[in-house]
Amino acid sequence: MASLPDWTLVRSFLACLREGSLSGAARATRLTQPTIGRHVAELEATLGTALFTRSPSGLVPTPAAEALRGHAEAMEAALGALVRTAEASADDTRIAGPVRIAASEIVGVEVLPPILAGLRARHPHIVFELSLSNRADDLLRRDADVAVRMFRPSQDGLVARRVGTLGLGLYAHRDHLARFGVPDSLEALPRHHLIGFDRDDRSARAVVSGRVALAREDFAFRCDADLAQLAAVRAGLGIGVVQHAIAAGEPDLVPVLPGALPLALECWVVAHEDQRERPIVRATIDALAEGLARHAAKGAGARV
Image (cartoon, rainbow, N blue to C red; front, side, top):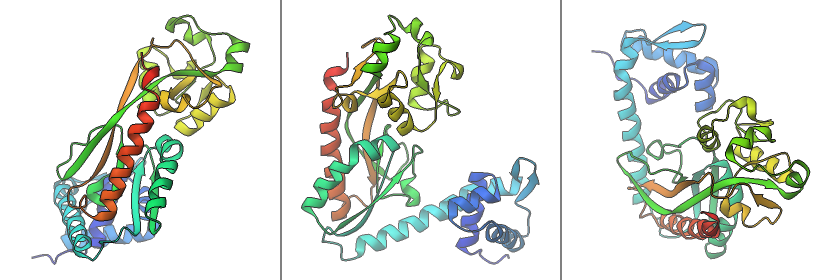
């Protein structure tokens, strides 16, 4: 019978499965590429089977690797549960120490700082770790303690609190509209300077674009970073999609074709069910829920 593999080897194996290359796995785990390669080779030797084949496009999992995926992910989830249980058993009655929050770039930069400042005022010993990404960090893998998401998570073991709806619409700087004019219909949009996606056609702004039959070539400013798109709208580069609540605080941003392209995203605060009763996590959830609800209310009047 093969000896049980070290968890470090399984972790590197999972990273290769998810990233599709040694370099991607190294970035995801913060290890070096040679280290990942050694881990995979050692795991293959331990198990007595090949797990990947090399191809010009990266690593291709063998049937054996695919058969092991579920078991490896179960190990990952079990280890996460062990850590959460240990932390929950510790003496953490004080609201102090680190709490890791995952959020999108826009929410993390434009919305969360004043909310976190208010939480810090009440609990000065709290330490914030903010993970900014538009991907859905998996709380089950301990990527974060609390997450702000624009969808309700479906994984077992997570608890979610719906805090409101974030409406979005088309906006432009008033100087841009004064110079280039205002479109009189959705069909006229391609004749104007538009801000949109570059390569990521899954973003919220890409969804908007799909509703009005816009292609990448129709955009005069292309970028997959939401923060850069917002900065471009503020700078007067063109017409783009902005949260109503953000635009409400900026008098130079003017709605374009208000009501013609309604789009709303539900906002949820999410945590693992094993963590929600930790005082620091509970205080963070409450503060985020209250602050995000206020933020959503700012833009409620603009949604028509």
